[in-house]
Structures are given as structure tokens and as C-alpha cells.
Image (tube, rainbow, N blue to C red; front, side, top):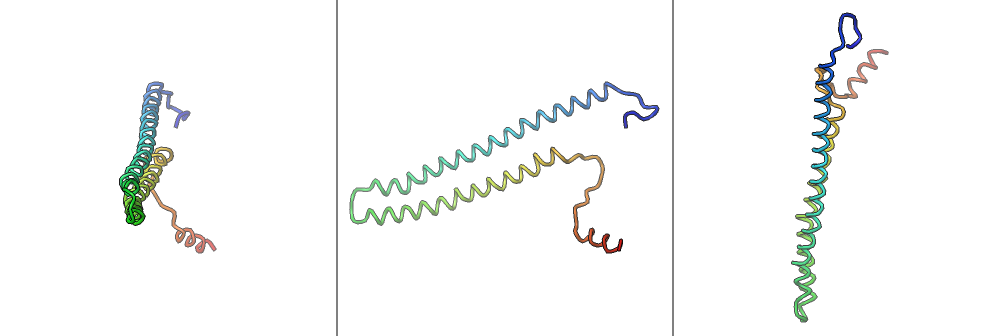
Length: 137
């Protein structure tokens, strides 16, 4: 600890430590920005895929020449569009949400609170708390 007897203030050591912290902060900021840009790119891809699926399925059925089968073709094309939308876009959105939650946990949360300073991790267990409470009584 700084301020204890016999230990002098070392400007060079503190300067190096602050430079390292600054570099880590800048790299973290660039990393977080790139991660959010990746999420934005996924949302743009979702919009473009939806447009393509709609045009190729429903748009193709609606551009058919007028006939007795046109309403049935639109109905079938819409069913295909919904299946493709669910199969690709909804699953892609679920993956996007999963990746975003994982990113928040491991990139942002760990950067803010986790320091590998040698203390062992002990997760919260209600059983341990209750056991200590019962033994104290």
C-alpha cells in the first residue's frame, strides 16, 4: 500500500500502470463499438433477407397472370414465406439476442468488475448461508 513506512512513491511505476490502464480502456472502447456495429449489421441483414424472401415468395405469386389459381398461389406462397421467415429470420434473431447477452456478460461485465487479483471465486449458495445461519443460532 502507498503511504506505509519505508516505501517511497515511485512515479515511473504509477505512470506505466496508468498507461497500461489507458491502453486497455481504449481497446475496450473500440471492441465495444465494433461489437455494437456487428449487432447493427445483423439487424440490417434481417431487414434485407425479409425483403428478399417476401419478393421471391409472395411477390412472385402476386405477379402471376390473373387466373383461378392466383389466390391459391398467393396462399401457398405466403405459407412458404412464413416458414422461411420463421426458419431463418426468427432463428437468426434468437441467435442475435443470445450473442448480445453473452457479449454483455463476458465483454462488458467482466471488464468492469473482474480483476484477476488472486482471490478465489466463491459463488453465492443459499445452502451455505442457511447453514451458517443455523449454526449461529
